[in-house]
Amino acid sequence: MAPGLTHPASSMEDVEKGTLVALYIEGKQHAIALGRTLMSTKEIREINKGPAVELIHFLNDAFWRFEPKKK
Image 1 (spheres, helix red, strand yellow):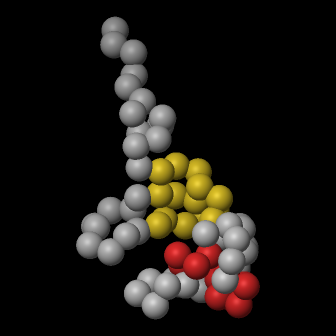
Image 2 (image 1 turned 120 degrees about the horizontal axis):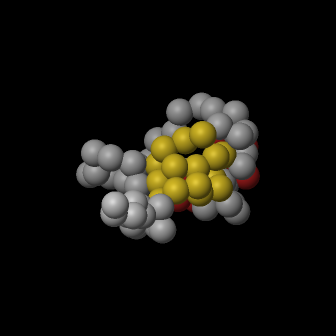
């Protein structure tokens, strides 16, 4: 949601709508999610409500837990 991205402790690089992005949380070295922006970062800052990133992959989802079949 946009308010989480515009929180005073957060930061965003300027990107256009539809850009693939990695989401990080404070204190973590690796991304916790990958997604595509639903608005440009300019729009996210101005509108500041509603969904801002469509998640494609996130920590502990089915893809995260995927294990290939053993031969």
